[in-house]
Image 1 (spheres, rainbow, N blue to C red):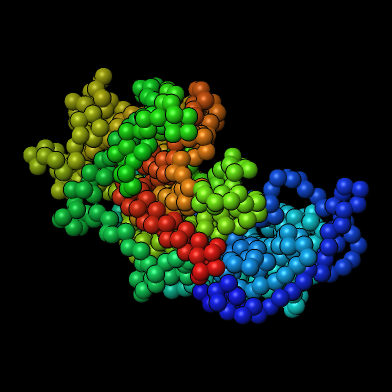
Image 2 (image 1 turned 90 degrees about the vertical axis):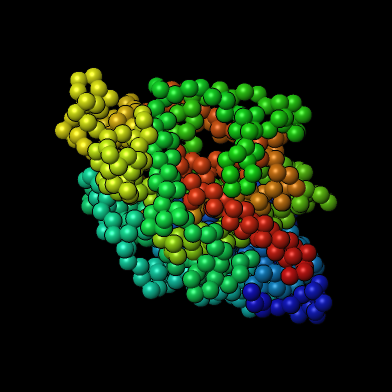
Length: 628
C-alpha cells in the first residue's frame, strides 16, 4: 500500500510535525473540551467511561451494521477501513509506529486529546460516507453525529489542511475513501459485480418439489414464495442474486495478488458430481447433511456433554477433537454441561446464523473481541507479553489486525465462491433425490447419480412401506420415489410447535432455516462463517498470547423458548468453548446443522481462514513496530 508520508522511525526524515490547537481544561473536576476549531466549550458525555474512543466508534459501527443489509463482505471492508483510519490517526502521534495509508508524525501538548480528536474525525468521515445511503441511515447517521457531539467535536470542521488533529483525521479519512474508490469493490456501483453475473442454473422454486439443474456442481439461486429481502422488506416471488462474485479481486491487506481468476488464496476444488474421482464423495456429503438434519428433533435425541471436556480441541480443518483434559487457567477438569443434543445443534445453528439484524460474522467476532478486552482489563499486553498498554492502544491494534484478517477472509472466501460457483445442499439433495437411488441397480428408482440408500435415513417409498403402520405411510401415492428422514420444516406455529423429524420426499427437503430465507444468496464453497471465524481466532490467539479465552471458558446461553425457527428449547442451552479456535469451529460447524453447507465448505474455509489471520497479524505487527 502506498503512503503519503514516511516515518523517522523507518529511517526517514520526519516530514510533518504539528501541535494540538485544542486543549482540555479541568474545571471543578469536570472535563471541559474545546475543539481545535475554537467555539463555545461543552461538557463531553461519556455513556461508557471505560471505553476508548476507538471502542466507541467500533460499537457505533456494529450498530450501523445491524441496521443495514447483512452483506458480510461489505461490512468486513467497512470494519477494516474504519480500523485503518483510527490506526493511522493513533500512529500519527507515536514516535515508532507506521501508518498504513497516511504515515505522518505529529507532536502535541496533550497526545491523548489529540489522538481522540483525530481518531474521531477520521472515523466519522469514513463511516458517514459509507453509510449515508444504507438501510437504517436515518438512525445511523444521527448516531454517528451523536458520538461527535458527545465529544464536543463540531461536524462542520472539514479542513484537511494543516496539522490540527481535526485536519489530520479528515486527511486520513479522505485517503481511506480515495483508496476505497479503486480497490475493486465497486462501491460506486453499489458493490455489484462490474462484469455482471448470470447463474448457470435456473432458479429453484422452494415451494415446489425438486431441483432442475443444468450443472449439479454450480450454484442455483432460489425463488421464494415469500422472501424477506436483505433490507427486511417482504418480496413476493423473489429470486436471489449472487452477492459479491467479484470480491476476490478486492484489494486486501496481507494477501498476494488475486490474478485473473480472483483467487488470492486457492482452497482447492470442491467435490463435483461430474468428476468420476469425486462423484461418490459428492453424494456422501449430501447424505451427511441429511443425517445431521435427522438429529434435530429434541423428542428423539440423547443428552450429551457439551462442555470443553468433550467437545473441541480439533486439529485445524478437522472435527477430530476429543475435548480438553483440564482448564489450563484453573488446572482442574471442566464441569459437565449436559444438553439435549438436538437442542445443542439447533442452538448452534441459530446463535451463529448472523443473518438480518445481526452484525454479520465479521462484526460478531468484533463484538466477541470487545468482550475479551473487557475480561482482560487491566492486563492488556499486546502479544501477551511486555508492558501493559492503555485501552486505546490495545483497541486500535486489535481492530487493525482483526479488521484486516476479516477483510482478507472475505476476499478469500468470496474469491472461491465466485470462481468455483459451487452448489448448496438444498439443490444437491433435491436433485440427487429426484434422480433416484444409486445404491442398487436391481432395485426400484435406480440412477447412477441418485442418492445412496441408507436404511432408516434414505429409502425408496414402496407399497409395503406406505401400508398402514408403515414408516412411509404419510407418503402414500409417492411409491417409487426417494424419501429421507429429516427435519420437516418450520411448523405453522413456530412459537409453540416443533417441525420435528420424519419421513419426507427428498425432492421436498429444506434446511433448518426460516422459509423466508432458506439459503444465502451466494455459492457455498468456502463458508464465509468458517473463514471469518478462524481468521478472527488466529488474531485473538496472537494478540492475547494464548489460544484460550479468558478464564479458559467462554460461553453463551440461549434462553428457553428463544428459538426462532420452531419451538424451543425447553430449557436454557449454554454453548461453551475453551479456545478461540473451538468457538470458530462451532461457528463453522453450525452451518451444517443449519443445512446450508457441506463439510468441505466448512473445513477448507477453516484452513484458509486461519492463514488469513496469521498473515494479517504478522503484517500488522510490522506496522506496530515501525517496520512496515
